[in-house]
Picture (cartoon, rainbow, N blue to C red):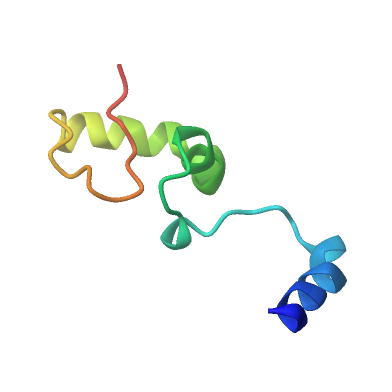
Length: 66
């Protein structure tokens, strides 16, 4: 564990702060929005069209647009 923390401390200044969507747990909607960035609104519109009832929600869920 120590070496992993030391490695992260060393490379953290070079991190973009991005989020890998497949590695998210139950971190909340804001973190999901961060993962998809500027694509989130487009994906929400697609979700509204193809999954308006949010049937496919057991993942890093993008809610259908209102």
